[in-house]
Image 1 (tube, rainbow, N blue to C red):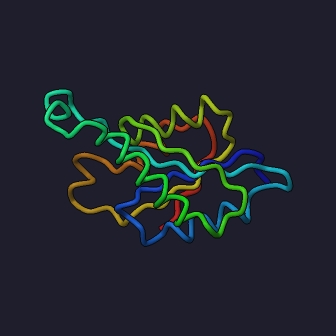
Image 2 (tube, rainbow, N blue to C red):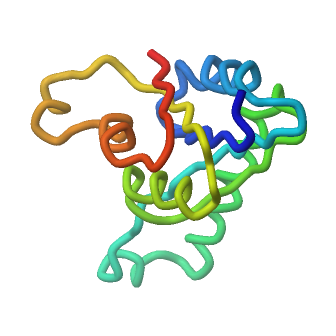
Length: 135
C-alpha cells in the first residue's frame, strides 16, 4: 500500500480518469493521502499580454472546479492546480511532495507520440517513484 499517491488528470483527456481515481483508492493505505493534480500549460508572455486581465486566474479556478467534480468519488482528496509543462511539472511535484506512487491515465500511442512522446511516457521515464499507468 502507498502513503502518498499523486493522480495527474488532464481535463481534456477524460476517458480513464475515473479508473485512475478508482485504482488510487484501492492502492492507498489507511490514513494515506491522494492528491489530484492538473497542470495548466504555460502561456508564453507574448500571448498572455493579449489576454483579458485575470484570465489566467479564472482558468485556474475553472480547472479546480472541474477537478473537484472529477474527484467527487474520492473523499478527502487534495485538489491542486499548477502551471508548467505537464510531464516535467508532474514529476517535480511528486518529488517535491514525497509522493510514493503516481497513477496516470494514458491513451494508446499514436504516430505523433513516437515522435513527440506522451505525457505518461515522460512521467514513467523521469518519475522519482513508482508509476501505475492506466489504459
